[in-house]
Length: 188
Image (cartoon, rainbow, N blue to C red; front, side):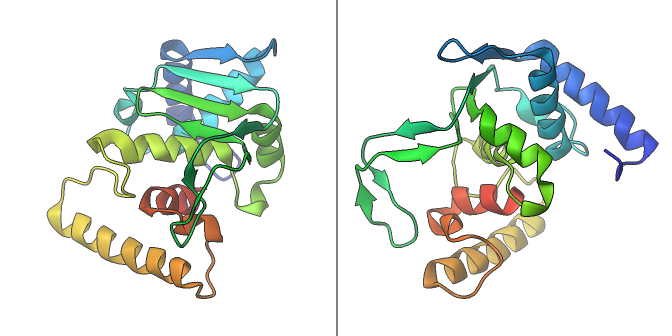
């Protein structure tokens, strides 16, 4: 907030209020979601679209807030290398193409208090929503300029492949899971 100009703060407030008026926040497992929690999520999510306006979030309908990390089960990729597992895995959030975002409140609160860590589950999951706008989770949000899109794909593919090779990298290894995770990890 302190790093934003007066104009940016005003635009962020409008975006966050718009998100709050349009998106339903639901509590899971008897958890109580407060107005302050909703405002924190909406404000962080609005940072991603500060220069884009509210349109990129048009498909988001519901944010489901769990009190703590959830356990995911079922077959899925385990990260770089494409190996599969069905072992239970702790997760702090998920984004679904049908317009739902699931967040673990303990992670949201911790990330907000410790921004220098470079991890933020709200930014990560809302980045997935931006990526899904074109119907694909491929690490490329809709870019209208063909040259810009080509450059985006070139740079992101190079960095994704470097993580998968195990090169020393700023991005954590989870970004090597697939291009969609690479984009979301780089965002948050």
